[in-house]
Length: 181
Image 1 (cartoon, rainbow, N blue to C red):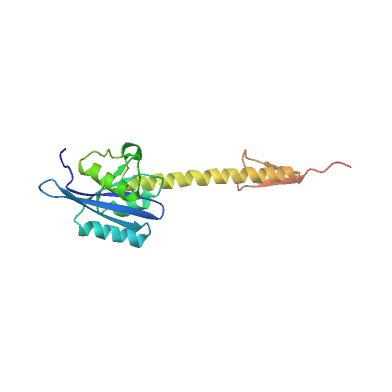
Image 2: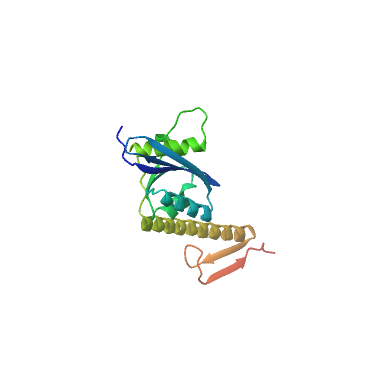
């Protein structure tokens, strides 16, 4: 098969560490692999970036397992040509699966151009999506709190009549429902 990326890296990211494999292909088609493991803390991600630059690697592929890939992706996206791979399309053989083998396998697939990239929106769109999702979450939380307050007042026999349909920060009239004597 034709080599698409002569120098590339595969990263297998986990919660507390990541394994990075760099493949360097010579002119005769023979390739060498170097593998290192790094923590997923900021300092070690910076060390991994430095190590990739030391080895003249500018093309990187990583697997999208869980949410652990996101901080690594965000820190590396300005320095490298990144490809995010769906694990369903990069399955390896079922025997003796290790992180080193996964990283090497990702790098080998990417070296030959066999990794189908996942769609990742540009950074400004991702930031806007995050803000929109957070705003939606806050609005839902506010509505839930309003319902709780209304329910507490109802359970305590305090009726709340408002001139508006929903509880708002406006004038309210309160009275206690007491049995008539």
